[in-house]
Each structure stands twice: as structure tokens, then as C-alpha cells.
Length: 339
Image (cartoon, rainbow, N blue to C red; front, side, top):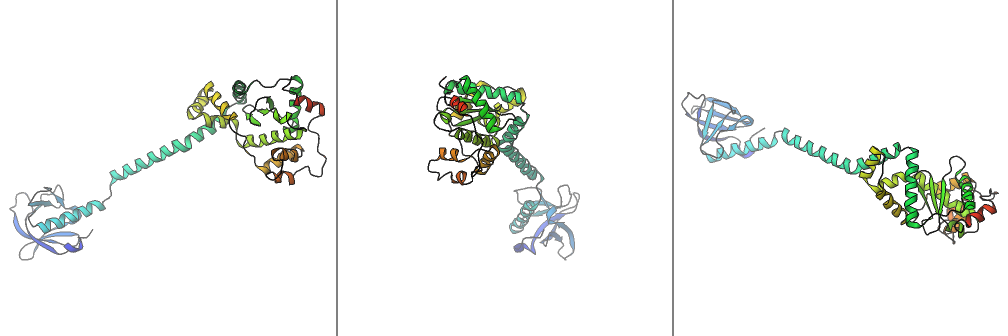
């Protein structure tokens, strides 16, 4: 640390003593480069203090008293305003340049607190939801799915229950999803979103998908599209994100979920339009099921303009597609809500 440029070689008269027992003597005080020097009138150096170590013994008072260190017996008294101002400015500059461990701790603590807060806001809820979803057993998923199904029935009306139609739904599920753990398909007569996937491998569908179309390929297409959506968004995860952190924590720790968030989520599901699906993934599903994508595409858009990819990339184009349902099953399915 060096003295400020405008004060280099500044000199003043002061009173100095080396020990408490000594008499104060008049000295010439020189402000040098990083040091304060006391000299006799003849020029002999009497004391040499390092500026970073100089301490003010009587802050704010004049004459000013200085020492080379807080516990030193050596002492210097100064009355010259310019010299006092110079020393004080240099001491202030040195103090600002010194490391501040306490301040560093404050900054570090504040930084960690901010990081913890951000983790609590952005990372913890997401991590807790993912953990809960991954640990939820199939039986609990099915229980939650039945709870949601019951709430949807309260809001939208009872599901259709014709015996012939239920058997046709079983065959439709196996035909579109495969014979390895096909979902339970439940149809509702009221106006609901085209299809919804509930926890526990339950799919609900609007009866309009059977009643308003001539062939079962359209209904099958909507079911395939729903499977693509369910693979992207786990229905339990969707429920927990809607219900919030408190419900998620309770489900994780106790395995229980109250009826209110179930009802609220059921109402939320019924109030939203069915989102679009990734076209490439959907075409893969059509190819795997050996079902033409064109009937589904034209059901969504009669002009074909917005579903051109599904029409042109039909995996069954030029091939003989396997029947989706027998005529008898399709008729039963169209009449499932009339029984």
C-alpha cells in the first residue's frame, strides 16, 4: 500500500515519544511511500511506522494521537490539519482494501440462502413429485384411478354400461393397445374430452367417438393418440402437479390422498380440450397396431389440411389393414349408451 500521490513527501511538526516514561519531543513527521517517518531537527530518523499498521488513538479529536499499533507504547501527536487529513484518507483507503471475513461470510450465507430458496421453489416440488410417482405401487395407482373415475361420474354422469358394449370395449382395447395389459376403457354419454387416461391403466372416452362415425378406425385412432399422450405425461404426475406440494408430500408419506384434490383434478380434466400429439409417435402407433391413420385424420379435419402428414404417411397405405372390430362388436359399441 502506498501513500496517495498528492500527499507523498508531505511533512509536518509533531510531538513523539518512544515509551510511556519518555518526555514528548518535537519531531519532523514525513509521509512517505507506505510509511510514516519521525525525524529529529538534524535529520536523524527516530521512528519508522508502516502506514497499514498505524492506529488512531482518539478518533475525531484534535490534536490527533497515533500509534504504530493498537498495543504499542510509542505515540505521535499531530495538530497539522493537512497531515491529519492525509493520514486519515490513507487509513480509510487501506481499510477498504483489506479483506472482510465477516462480510464474506454474510455474502456466502446470503448466497446459500438464495440457492436454497431457488431449489425449494423450482427443484424440490418437481423432485418430490417425480419421487412420489416412481414409488407409487400399481394397486395405489388403480385406487386413485377409480377415485377419479367416480368423481368424473359425479360431474359428467354415469358411464355407459351395456353388456354387449362392454365386451366390445374389451376387444377394442386389445386390438388397439395389444394383448399385453390393455387398459380398461370406460365410455361416457355426456360431452367430455374425446379421451382421457386415468391412473391405473384406465381410459375414458366420449360415446361420440362411436356414435358419430361409420367405422371403428376413427375410435381406434383416438385411443392410439391417447396412448401417445399418456406415455409423455404420467396421469399420476398430472394429478400431483395440479394438486400441489402438500398433497404430494402426504401421498408420499402416508399413501393417502384426500377427496378434494381428486374432485378438483377431475373437474380440471373435463374442462380442457384434448391436446395434440406428436405426429411421428402417433404414426408409429398406427403402424404397430396395423390400423390406417386416414379415417382418424379426416375425422379430425375433413379438409385434411391440418392432418396432411397423417394422410400421406399412412402406414397401411397400399396394404390390407386388419379389421379393428367385427360389425357386430361395432354395432354394440355404438349402442353401448342406449342399453
